[in-house]
Length: 362
Image 1 (cartoon, rainbow, N blue to C red):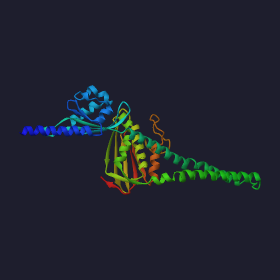
Image 2: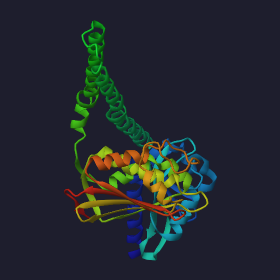
Image 3: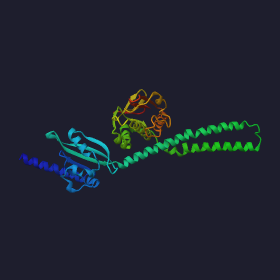
Image 4: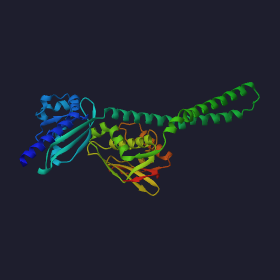
């Protein structure tokens, strides 16, 4: 009787599993410990061009359908360790997925009897985040150019006008016309600057208000934006967040972290395993967000100029030299400050110190 009850229970569990796999909207696979494909959901069939006859086949024989070279290695790793694997992957058809591989535990036997693999298409999100970073960079640089570069000619015009005013024959029509035209030009330039910095961008400034931000969420956005570089460099990004929430402008904080982590990746030699640690904690009146790498580091001389516009410490690394300048501008304009600790060939730590507002500890 007991055996019959167990069979009924097993049939019921199998029915539940069949119903789940038939009705879920997420692409999922069930692969057993022998790497045999046992089940897949209809969205997985559509996403990876799977056919009903693939059930019972070795995953090795149909791996090309998934267009991800290390899939079998990842499955074996989860079966061996019993630990969940979560990672962003790019398939050979250039799509991006959030892939989660969960061990399928047989609890009464205390063993892993396969894995359940979930794929979530994040291609649109990756593209959107990249576009956002591009727009933020262009926006900030445009405002900075207006605020700094265009103001310099105005100073020159002012000085020139002072010289004109010292002309002896100030009663001549020619002099008065020249002076009037000069003053009109100066007024027009000032109006242009006002229109661009105050009127045209006024609405955007209003919307770019500080808000309570979830820091892990911002870091995840940055990881998604930099997914190609992270995969190519095989970089390990770890977190030690003692402060999880901070009040700041979302796009500015994301842009600052994007540039810091991007730099940490770029300035780590391919000859070593790249490791980046993102930390957050309170220190005096500040919330500190630290990005520490094990890259090439820099000299004390380079540290003095690294936040200048177009300044780069290595010509062999791709870049425009505006990333750290932009980070410094964002932080200092918000009343914060930046500290840098670095030694050649021993890595770099950059600390972004933001004025403490409403924060929440983890």
